[in-house]
Amino acid sequence: MTRIAAGERAALQQLYDATSAKLFAVCLRILSDREDAEDILQEVYVTIWRRADRFDSGRAGVMTWASTIARNRAIDRLRARGPMAYAEQVDDLQIADSAVGAEALLVTAGENGRLQDCLSQLDDRTQRAIRTAFFEGLAYAALASRMDAPLGTVKSWIRRGLARLKGCLEP
Figure 1 (cartoon, one colour):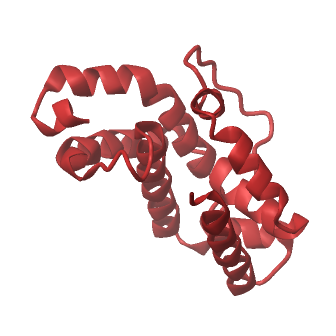
Figure 2 (cartoon, one colour; figure 1 turned 180 degrees about the vertical axis):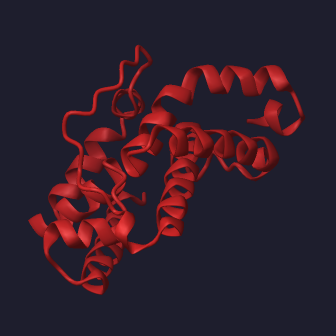
């Protein structure tokens, strides 16, 4: 990220090659529209190019940071479509990717075990809401619909759950 912040196009190309398939999958999973997902993916890399100097490796890994940007941009696009745009989950969506997955990277970093332990300390409902929102990339409104719960309630479950996770994961 330091090289990207310094304006090295080759560094951005390396990052793109290493992450574009996963980030595209995040966008496509949320938007369920290939053209929108491609547009958002381009916006993600423009954002990374412009904000690389703001990346803090002490707070998150590069893939986590980029995935968060992709997720947030895709959700913003979904919200811009209006409330009728939330599509049902597509379970059979498969995207071929030979790159190492985000979960494998977490295992390599030794963080997956800690995260799973902390997640297991949450009640089933909160755990399911967090996993669906963050690992599947489902927008809160669509999650509320899927869980048959009010939007504010689902947001509260997630907010309280994330606070408990943060407390559990902090050294």
